[in-house]
Image (cartoon, rainbow, N blue to C red):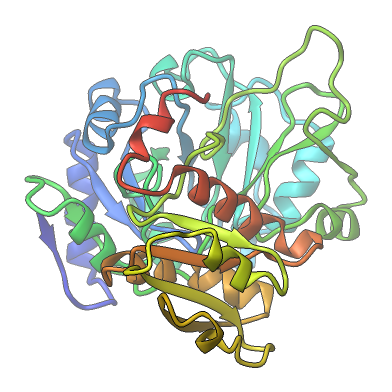
Length: 364
């Protein structure tokens, strides 16, 4: 595995990464959401390497990442021609969403052009596309001059990486993998995914930083929840991160309701256990000495949704490496701004523990 330890990568390093992609290699690179494991979206052998390296089932679709225009030409860019090699048609709603939120943490699902490889769509007639905002990702994509598929750079079903060090730890000993270091990811959870493939409505397939309320305010487009506006006989496309078990640490993870942390501790019978109890910074101490039979330690996290999201995977990885027997997280508050992290925590909880990989094949 080759890497550069400095966060700011030189032009020569970017050029090396571009050549690696053109040669059919894999390149891990930062986006504003999480680090991605990238391959040429037009190369079936390179795409196959992603599935093998991650241990990802081949019927799980990948997101195509494309270069966005520089900010000063954003209003003039012809997105129709940019997306023509990938999508069958581009609606007015799609263009509104693109102009409002690209580059950024929003993935759009379209009916695919016939030239798009079935290897990256999981055999579906749809393709998921986004333009990431991270400057290093954009420089890589602009120089590559093509689409790059890039699922999160981690073993399938496990906690997504938000730093280059996470990627190196995940794929230690993986020969031929180049890692670009762009520092820590700012958003910290994967992009919001909106399905536009039906042509009728925008449908939320995966929550993220960009919420339906924000989309409505900026574009006037109403985003429907999955199942809310599905015609009989139609089905939604499969997308990344939609398994019930995903983003999971090896340490068992459970969620507790407000004010019920002691109840959650009582349900864990092993009196010799070491438990990490995550608590909001807005709360007073949970007085864990009231439950002396378990070695429990408080871990303080931000009660601001965006800050909590940006540090979620970092916290999960750190706690997973500290040798706890159980990790307890508070259930996030209600509200769209918390839907993304709630989704990730619920999937992480379901898939967590040493035998979590046994869950993965049961859900699609």
